[in-house]
Amino acid sequence: MEPPAIEREVGMEVYLSPSPGVGGKLRFFPEDFVVEELSLPPPRVPGGRYVAARVRCRNWETNRLIRELSRVMGISRRRIQFAGTKDRRGVKVQMLTFLASEAQVAAISLGDFEVLERYPTDRPLELGHLVGNRFDITLRVPSGGDLGAPIDAVTAELDAAGGFPNFFGIQRFGALRPVTHRIGERLVRGDMEGAVMAYAGAPNGQEDPAVREARARLERERDFGAAVEYFPRHLGFERSLLHHLKEEPGDWPGAMRRLPLNLLMMFVHAYQSCLFNRILSRRIRAGMPLDAPLEGDLVLPADALGRPDHDACIPVESHNLERVRRKVREGKAFVSGVLFGSETALAFGAMGDIERSVVEEAGLVPKDFLVPELPEVSSKGTRRELLVRPGDREISVGPDTARFRFTLPRGCYATSLLREYMKGEALDY
Image (cartoon, rainbow, N blue to C red):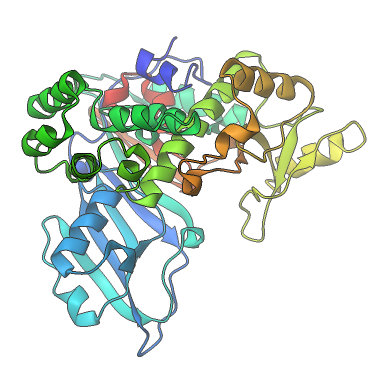
């Protein structure tokens, strides 16, 4: 069975499990998709300069949430920190830290946002504090009949394979408007004007008609001053970018800098993610295992918390093959694929051939990921595990529904697991 075109465009070209999917839809209600961060919270420090808060938010994308919190609190967005970004649709429980007073945090009034707990601390959250996420997801399949048998079949196939493919899910690229990888590619190639237009223009049929028409008009007219007036108010990031070009015509790098740095980095990472997905798809299509290393592979050792150490690579050679295979079986090492950047090592052997072919077909060399126009988005690259084993997995089937509860390491996508069961349209994830 072939995945939908939108998934193939971002490199998800195959499924690992051969059994048919059940279709259905995720996030029919926001409460159908609940994710809770598993993080290392900052310590409680009476009198600390920061306030740590455990919050629950509903249908808030992380960057827009931080922007809105900054506005209602009257503080710079740089004074609000988070450990991991979250997709908009669904219910999220996560940690934030604020360089603000407890009274300011207690006074936050924002729709679909609730502070569950707060306390003083002496340090901000950092990305490394995120360990993983716990998911509670309800899949709805109207008139789905007996869901138990097909779900059991896919579960058995994934168990036999050792887990599910660690694809970057469609949310990485924009579920309704998958353009982040296209923006990232333009940044890497030094096409700043193209990046601006891919972000603010590039209308998509799934968007609200008013948004779609605004983007299309910008594409036609290229009048950024006029666009500031007609772009919908809720497109705050786009409007900031357009306002800069109204004041500074032709300053494309400056316009991109009006976006948060983590969002700019997300664009470059999305392009790297698309290339990784293609590499992973080709390994699956070639019949190469994801749960057992081959000669030429690079494996990642587990760190003290059992997570892949992305800064360390062990080449697999004939003399250590059996030992490394044993470590992988024990969950102490992970077969990896490249997230190509300015300093990444490629594998050898068959996996190296796959990685080189994807990179060469894209016409890339390492120095492309050193971006002189926007040095802050340059990326050294890294390596990423090819396979994920969900933890604490529970699956229960009811009338026209299936409930999935599990944990995943940070950076892994629940939808990449659920797509194996659904095998449906990307918008249903």
